[in-house]
Length: 111
Image (cartoon, rainbow, N blue to C red; front, side, top):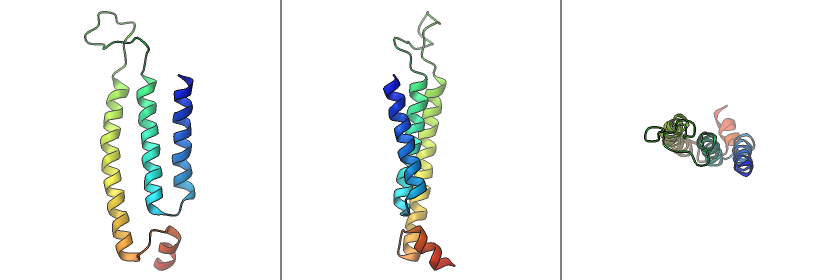
């Protein structure tokens, strides 16, 4: 269980590193997707219980899996797909206009 949270923490750090240090817009979009995936994993694994059952069918209400984080994960997946499509559309338009994906060069050309 601790290994799972360690992997999630590493994924969060990788995503934050890509967002903060990279200058290529595609790499930043990939970093945001890695960060979103890590948050979704955190939602799902936070509600995991070994031996847990579905709360509706089970008569034992002491040991069940909480469905709310799973619903939040599904919502996060839909929102993540939408934001990724929007970001990639903006990246394509910026590339068409400036012929580069480097943020520093785009800022120089704008100013």
